Length: 221
Image 1 (cartoon, helix red, strand yellow):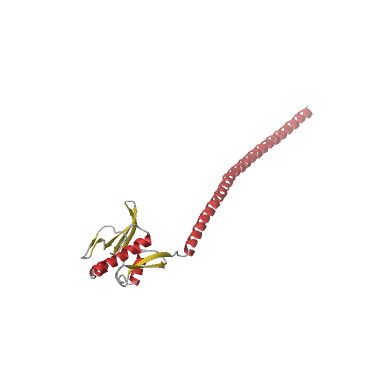
Image 2 (image 1 turned 90 degrees about the vertical axis):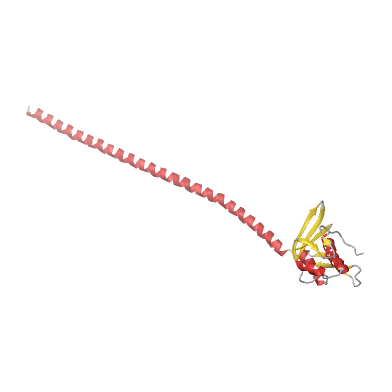
């Protein structure tokens, strides 16, 4: 009897020991599973964080690639503009032909001198007339315009007031020859149909004549 009781006690102890070991193993397994689950979740979050960063880097790289051609295009346009500007600066100034009417020695008409000037302008023509002794050197151009009136190519020349003062000091013949020299010189040089001469924006009145409106090529009679 005692021997049987002892065997039962031994079996119970063994069962308790194995049961405790099994629980311990189960708990360890659960803990291990939870730990692995947490680590997997952490890895997933880290990968999730890395993915937007990589996508952002790709977008940034693509943006840089798009910017490069635009910058190159701007540089190309700038380079082309600089070349054109350089060509303009290096281009030689074209000379022009001017026809300068000068009263002849007998005051019976005009001698026509064909001269070469750096650039055909109203100031250049007045300068030529001053140099030829037709006008005084105090006369200047106030305004000059090339335009069209009634289908004709015409000129509008506005001179300083001392032009009128100079004309008024002349006789009739001198007035006609001087005004005719200005009119014909401008018309022939610019190949225009008519010209209007004013003084400080007003009609030219000399005492002998009122020069209102447009004048065509003049002949001395």
